[in-house]
Amino acid sequence: MSIECDDNEIKKDKELGIYGIDSGHAWLNSQPSHGNISHLPPAMRQFRNVAGKPAILALSAFSCGACFLGVVNVGLISVDLLPTVAPPAFFYSGFCMIMAGALAFLNNDNFTGLTSSSYGAFYLSFGAYMVFNSEKFFGGQILAPVELQKGIGVMLFGFIIFNTYCFIASFMLTLGLMLQFLFIELSLILSMANMYGKISSVPGGVFSILLAATGWYNAATMLFEDMFGRNVLFNPLMIHVFEWIRKRRQISH
Image 1: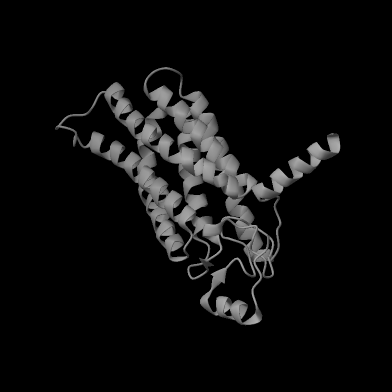
Image 2 (image 1 turned 45 degrees about the vertical axis):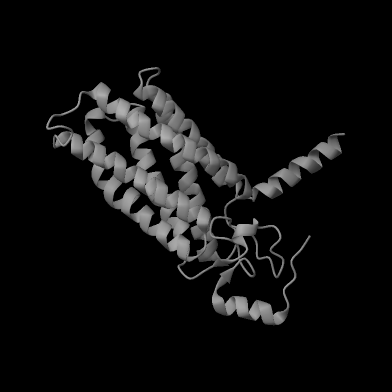
């Protein structure tokens, strides 16, 4: 079923800056719809392009912090350098993501606003853990590594719950974003297991690096589309992926 817009409605939407009539959603990297926006989720059909594409900034900032943590967890650099993640966690992965989330809400882009703001707060919280512990804010003493890890583990559990329903929602977005939220989910679960001493830090670190690479790819997809005016990198909508799978099954039968 398609949604048809007459000329006056399309002109009005362009004046208001509504996205989805003549270009893709900030998270989607979709082809111009030329009046047919039925391929977009209902909540995204009134997307307003009044604040650019903050998702590009959010994905880039998120990936930087995830890569740093992943490199430490897999042992490529010394764990003694972990406190150095606090400054970029505050100013790039934290502050910039919250700013991008606020801009996304102005665009009526609730998915980007929610995920960007939440993971910006995640990085700010992680940086605060490092600073507060080193400055003896926890009862005037430095917590033992085991106690600190258990506290971080509780925080990770909360974000596992949050990321689970974001992962489900990502099935209405692109293949790249669906994979990124899958890698986030696995990274959070494995990292929490590490915080409670069940496994080493390496598995969670591997998926942190994978999600960082996927996030940078998604950001590059959107940036290149803006700069070159067309899709440059492969990143199809999940509904198109499902349609392709369905057709392949029909052919095989």
